[in-house]
Image 1 (cartoon, chains in turn orange, purple):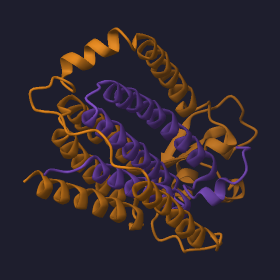
Image 2 (cartoon, rainbow over the protein chains, first blue to last red):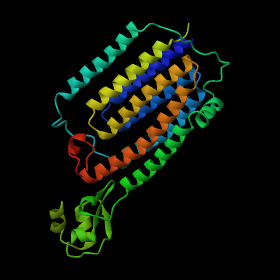
Image 3 (tube, rainbow over the protein chains, first blue to last red):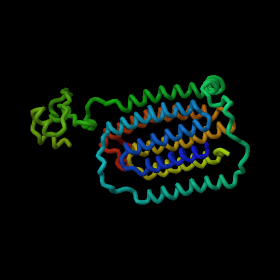
Image 4 (tube, rainbow over the protein chains, first blue to last red):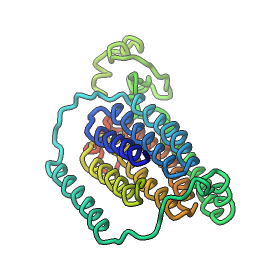
Length: 219
Length: 101
């Protein structure tokens, strides 16, 4: 029974992973990645780790992937870019390196003796929330605190990275609509940072009341 | 007889290999980011498998820490991706081949 479940979820995970790599649309690969996360969560349940399984669903499939999909949709990039100027050797290189990694795995499996270790009985409390919390706040309290500092640094770093600086010549275009500041359209008129949102340059020219040629030169 | 430890290790190795190959093959920076997440998850599976088979909770604590690191990586990495897109108007890594923004 557990063998059948393992085969089902392992096949699901590998299939979703291959689908993730082979999709060209990042949104589809994100959805395939969610499939990998969910099947891994099922495997965690089979490994008697219910806390990690629920955190996997909540944090990975929930929070992180929502963030990724949000960014994919925010940066709505055209998909039909032609396959141009890609370094030719990268695909064979990937195949060779994947073969090497798998060969290492096979080597280890054939040389290392299957030793001790059997799946723990259901009565064991390893993997329950109680034992994990106990471990985090006693033996591993230093890594726990360091992780909290890391998260604080990530919050500050992400904010300072993604913050939009005052409109500069390189910050004209934001996802969704073209945004032109008055001082970009008319370089003389400094101090006027009024942003204009529109979909085409002609609309911007009309809104600003300037010659459309002026804007075109800026691009 | 249920699944053996080696089965989980093989599954984890296969997932890691797919992720590593994906990082090399893909050129969309968001897709590369997701391949890195897949590799992190493959390592997490190894941790949980060892933790369960050796009845030691430490492995699952490391998974917990790896997950927080992955969340921090997601926040900072996506911030960098947005900054790159704002400067280059492209998500192709080939367009971001120089460090200067």
